[in-house]
Amino acid sequence: MKNDRISIYYLGHLVKNLIEKSKSLILIAVASSLLASAAGFLWGMIKTLVIIFSFVMSYGRDPLDMIALIELMDIFLIAIVLFIFAMGMYELFIDNISLPEWLIIRNLHDLKVKLGSVIILVMGIIFLEHLVEWKDPQGTLFFGIAVAVVSASLIAFNYFGGKE
Image 1 (cartoon, rainbow, N blue to C red):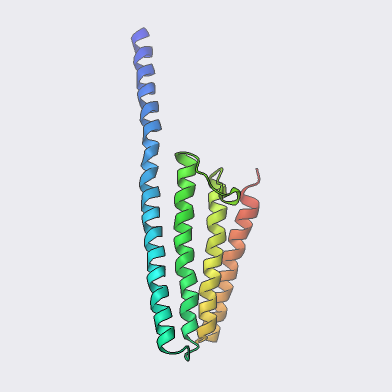
Image 2 (tube, rainbow, N blue to C red; image 1 turned 90 degrees about the vertical axis):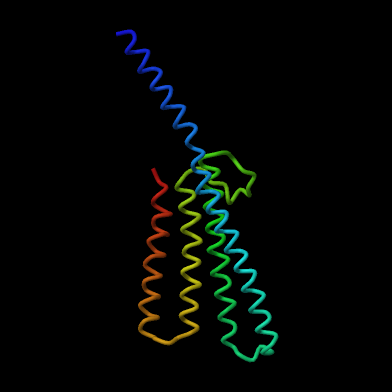
């Protein structure tokens, strides 16, 4: 009977150690998100240079070139989402990081709220792209309604989801 308690104690201790050490698996998600974020920022920088070159070469005559600037915001916002996700996961599971107060993530709900806010902004920019192109008015209307419904859902989740 005593040996059973000892073996259960050691097994429990072994499992606890394994779980404590496995939290470093989160580093895979953090590193992957940081890599994807860096790729997004790099892609945005390259695209910025191409847009500026195109704009200078055409002397800014084509007003639709401005749509490319809106697309740039989209690229950078997605890179920011990946960066915030990486920082949030690191801060939640590994260790605290020196961040501005508005970016400190104390729990999973804080991370979801920050990501939801940026997602709403990305959807707004994508809607603005559709609005500027204005090829299909009815499709644009339905797209705008869909963006509004998803945005309202995310805002409601942010507002009501954190209350205990």
